[in-house]
Image 1 (cartoon, rainbow, N blue to C red):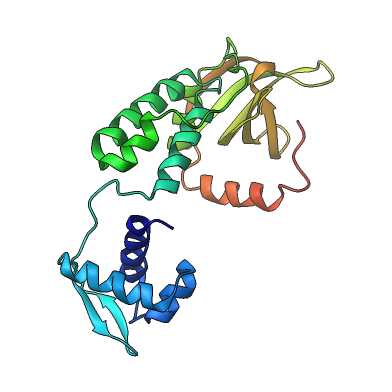
Image 2 (spheres, rainbow, N blue to C red):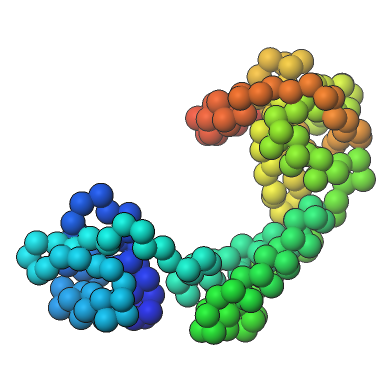
Length: 230
């Protein structure tokens, strides 16, 4: 681990600790020697980071200290770059455009060495960009999930049976071949997965399912192994 990343992780560890934490505990977490932690803490104290404590007792970060915004390790920065590259392959046009703005904002805010990880273009996500279905406005889907608003969709299943469903949307899954909307189907009385390319129309209803979204997502995650069929 680079020293800059290690110093950042030490501050994060102390910031989240509810009680003094020893150099040995920090060393084990970061997989370095205890002597390295002593040197790092001394370096941080010299930079006026308010770390209190002593060897053998433990260290704690005095309340009120805040890291600058958008401080990431090199690995965290690379994870963001890769995540944005994957986002640009989805069928959600607004998210594709937003991913570029995210990288621009981060590059303008982080220190030089981390900015290099963004602009160097060393991480790629290959593959075709998914085509956006004509009948789906993904911004409306995402808004309905956030606002917990019911949607009405015209849907054709695998057996080519056409139905109109009223759903409580809770998530969108992006696969390489298609996007899937997860929602509670009021027609079936259960959670169902709806392929976006099988939806011929999607309408906002103005009716809401307030404070149900988190519960339905927990129910969906718990049943992930068995899956849901439409």
